[in-house]
View 1 (cartoon, rainbow, N blue to C red):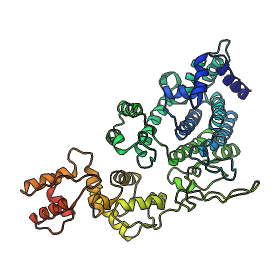
View 2 (view 1 turned 90 degrees about the vertical axis):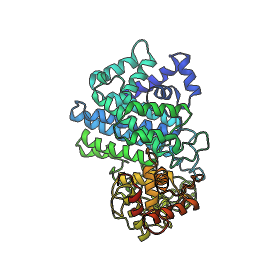
View 3 (view 1 turned 180 degrees about the vertical axis):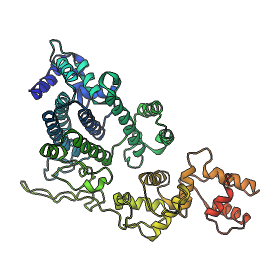
Length: 490
């Protein structure tokens, strides 16, 4: 019955609500509901961002359901509905990363022209889930606003938006919604910060490290300054920019959903349905890339291209009608990993880190990589560890990679130099300024800064050698000993 009501609601919204809705339904990709969410919640134009926003809504409703006062039967029903809604989402997720779920030979990587139809079906399911997940009184208000004598689409859509994290009326809907909204804002911040490393869009839509530098600096303070986050993200939006979601964000949300399923019900059958297609852990998302079925969160995000595992290409063989396509395989991981974090790094990503660390790219954590990891950690973390031990450690490497993707082009010679320049790049005293101050203090010639992407050119190398000689040191590399001499804190 609720499903029928929700479908009738959608029809009523289109035909009984005036020109504004008809105009958005025919001119806005995603329709009227999408336009309302753009105005009130996380703005999303691309398929990937719309998919992420939709799945975050589902997780939010599951979170509300997990703390609602429901009996065992209602909780079992909730778990089953969540599992059914996840099945509706999987084709949307696949389409968002150009993995056409229809399985038609030759169309495996075609963009999904029917994306809006799939999203409409999914949004209907979200409405249905909201009816069950909410406390009784709020569910009645939702149903009454949808089926009253005079349908007001603005009210119902704004109410639905509130139920899925708008949080502007957190006191009315409980502190849970307000907390979910705050978490979603931080999710969007992380999306922006992760975008420069993967963005392949042409200007002016390309998001670069320069665009997000202010947001990264604010986020690095770790004081959770939400007003500042929102202001900077609004400024980025005003430039016509949008972040690009990565599969790992879907995997993290999926892992959270699995956790929430455990809070909703203990019934074995309902719990299995609730968790179907979801990752088993938040710690190592790569492990869930092997599909549980033809599509699953964590495996549909692999890009298409050359046919080699891990190369970002489609490995499916051509199929005849009625023949099942070969299942996509997860990308290979770096060999010789020693920590949980290292065990999540693919060969493709590992080679990028090696290139940044002045190491010849290979498919594993070899001796040279370990040595330069130690140098980098000495510069950034002040430790002698030669491993990537924590997520924060990996993030430091990613930050340096965005600044200096190629060690050779930048003119660095080792991970210590990369780490020092990356560590102080966005501080009041960048490494270049620290070096120039030391040169001036030693009455040595101060060379002009080279043109990017070069950081250390021949003149700078010679200056480093001259400065080292003043301290009775040898060589033209920046070493720990030289840094200790020019660091004003010492």
